[in-house]
Image 1: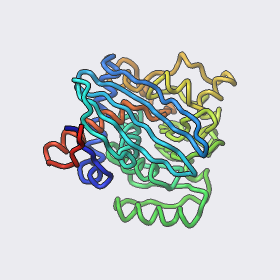
Image 2 (image 1 turned 30 degrees about the vertical axis):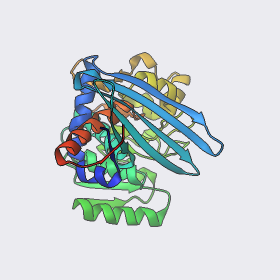
Image 3 (image 1 turned 180 degrees about the vertical axis):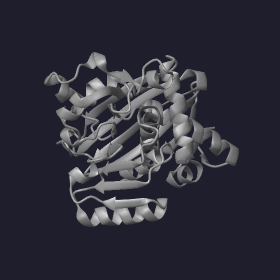
Image 4 (image 1 turned 90 degrees about the vertical axis):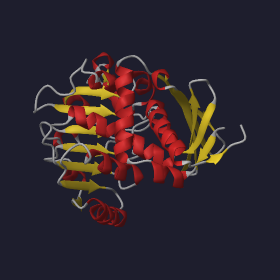
Length: 316
């Protein structure tokens, strides 16, 4: 029988370390051409949007899809996980799951693309996804200080205070966007902005960027100059990036970037393409968020749920 896992179950069963391991395994399978991704599709609703995306990992014995709605500024997520026999194995609430897998994808990119001594992190955004970026990136690099910028001052101060207490490291609000970029070793953008949140000329040599918010063509977090300066542009899925990456599409329109120069993260993980060749290079990971990550993490959560006897049994 299939099981249902609600948010409280996911919080009890899943951790960022587990997510990073599961997502890296999935991208390794992508690099070995043993994974398949169905890019996100969107349908308009009367008051919002419906989204659906899928993936399969045959060698792990799982496939699945994530669907969600965006209505009046509220997102509601669910993952359906199927076993190797095509039977529904689990239905999962997927808000925290989505935060974990997005952070984990940035962690994998950071592990293979950022300088090993990277210790200063700049973050744009003060929501759940920004929180997951900090949690994930500090799991793979020796982060000592995080500088955060968000447009709402009170929310920014509260976020920095909360994250400093949770992590035990120095997390400070930036006076402006430039302060979150200048002299940083890693920059992560986790916003819903339709315009670039910083100027590419502010980037220091050797910085690695995780851009996770531009997952439709109307959104842009980074400017053309940032893409132009990036020696290495990595995406989670070329097919999905061409459909959704407002950051890269604008750079391509201005001939500051050519799609044939981008590579998928799986190729970096298996060593077929270098994530960084020089300490002074600027490197960029454009994360659209693919169902490969959701299915890989959901499969691991499902295994742990079975071991723990967690989850409500469904009548099919």
